[in-house]
Length: 159
Image 1 (tube, rainbow, N blue to C red):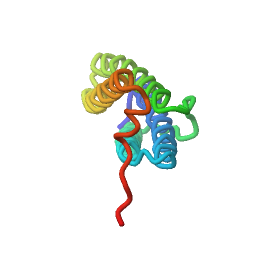
Image 2 (cartoon, helix red, strand yellow; image 1 turned 60 degrees about the vertical axis):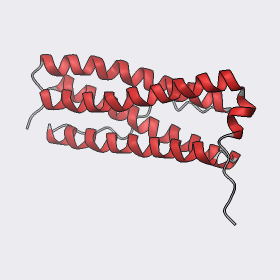
Image 3 (tube, rainbow, N blue to C red; image 1 turned 45 degrees about the vertical axis):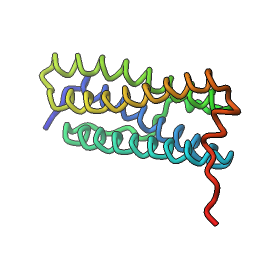
């Protein structure tokens, strides 16, 4: 099915964002694991995998619309060095995604591509949940301080 070029471009732009988020979240998860923040690392790794699922859905839709998914482009990967910097970097990815998704939904609905709009709405719901999580974590870091916050992320290895 031939898709609208503007819709395909929005889908590809969001695909680029998802591919970037996969890399950023996965790197943060590996860093967190290395720092011993195992609970946080598990959550961040799962977020990376969620972004991979989004990328898969977007890829399928672009192909269905006879477009070519762009896997060669990435946005800037923001790497945090502290837990606060990681949360802030990941939050920025989500802020940008939410803005892009809302704009895309409007364009897709105006062009009559309800299925693509529904895909964007589903992704938007996930991104809103993630930004809420990040906001909560940033508030906890601010209230507790980084050392106390990090202390609750550590799991003792099983003997």
